[in-house]
Image (tube, rainbow, N blue to C red; front, side, top):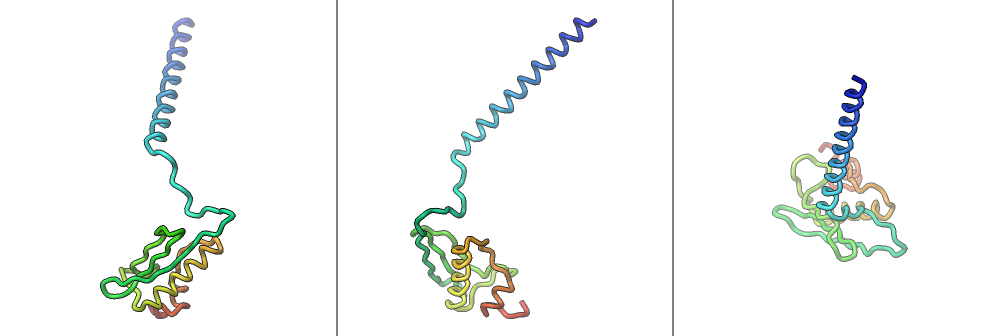
Length: 128
């Protein structure tokens, strides 16, 4: 009886080890399939990144693009923090909003834009 119980315990331990190995192998396979992890959104270096802003026309208004080191970083073709897909009415509105985003980037802050900030910029009215 004791010998039977010991044999069952050894078999159970062996199965658990096999299961653990299988899980590890699946994990390694998943890591290999994904390749290198995505780079972080912000990278701290000794050199300052070159940031540029440009406004562009969309169907019935304006949007903006922020480039970092000559690569597209943000392409915003509608007003953020506003329900629906509303475009900027003027080129200046798009540029003011992009400038706020760049200022936040330079301070290492979150680059989310709130509806209150859009009101302060004069991009949208108080009663959105």
